[in-house]
Length: 84
Figure (cartoon, rainbow, N blue to C red):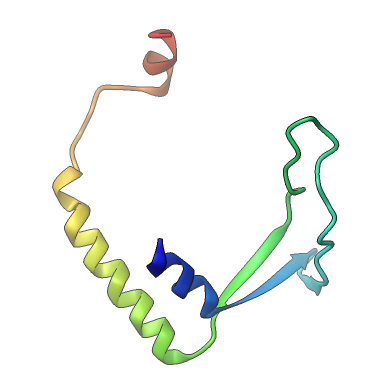
């Protein structure tokens, strides 16, 4: 979790509507018993080239480390839902 927090702090967060940057409404939540933030589009941009290089390097390492789980499967979402 620490790495995720550090990485997100290195991004510029910008909300986008119809291709234009807009200010986020911090009070925009659903009107339900289990309140959640309303959907919004966001653009994440690394703050510096150094951060961008670090993220790309970490992505390559993660892809290599997780490649042991790459395989073909015959399991489908439909099959998984029918098991309930």
